[in-house]
View 1: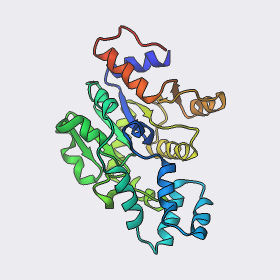
View 2: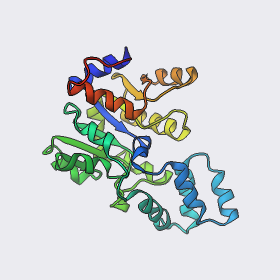
View 3: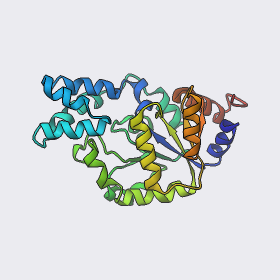
Length: 259
């Protein structure tokens, strides 16, 4: 039933996509554990032991930068090498681009998969200065953690995150999510970093009225209850399967979507 309600909202242009790292994995973008292993390769035994004690990945990066005397260059080089590359596939992003009633995407990802899939239909926004021209394009992409090709824009460590929530971009996002439902895709509440991230997002956006949705498969009952307490309705599908279902429905290949 939740999927049918969500589908109706998508048809009526009432949904914002909020994409996390899991939505890019199929294209060959790195998982957090892969990035950690690259960081480990630059550390001696004592440093790595210290970093492993950090519970959340942004805190680990903050400590890694401190161990490098405040330099962000080593972690930026790791991320650039792992992310700024030709994707193995764009199939899912291209299907999403084929759903004409979704015109607002927010992402915490640095990669350029959306830009490649949407082409010149897309306005990419990761600085306040880019807001003015964003509405000239049919689809807006808000990269709230920055862009891989503009390292100074990237929010990497826990210390970085504090500054973005006061920007004009966040004021725009508050207005957008007050009008439409938010669909989280590419996140998992089994991951404590994602749990913390989404909790903070909802707090900063002051999102209390509009129902949110999260596409995530096979969550245990305890996690389902946890989501519903945050006014987030779970959709029991993988991100890839969800986009495929919606694309097929919107383009007339399916008469209904299985719940």
